[in-house]
Image (spheres, rainbow, N blue to C red):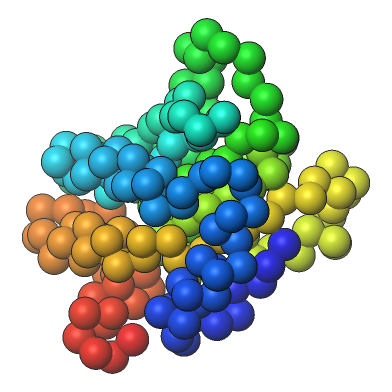
Length: 200
Ligand SMILES: [Zn+2]
């Protein structure tokens, strides 16, 4: 797995990511499918949810999708199960074809957390592409070599910062809305707002 050590300069990382990985999975245009994930994220945003979207692609087409739920400002507590990636993995149950995880690529508009990253690895998916880094709760930097064989030998690859700016726009808007309470006052909020103030 690639460590995203260059977070101080995300634009550079995006270029690196594109140059190195874009043709690694035959015929897949990462921008095109990240746009599909962004469509899911906008759906979440329109419903006052944390704007994360996810699609799972196999053999050149989307076979499952999901968006974040459980984060609306009206709730007494926020669900930490209903993440976009978990909901997309769950949606695979409705796919009528044969899921072949080794040929699938998961696109998510935010870096997966530890829970989702583990679920993706357990599903057998080998490639994860994300847009906006999660400096507070991202799980893809964990050292898989220190874990048990299922994780250590998963061979999962992570491609960061595909359409990062488009995803960042949504998080920026989310945190700027007074009514949105999810992660209000958090490190993630401060970092996100700083990205558009020239301080990040
Ligand atoms: Zn997650």
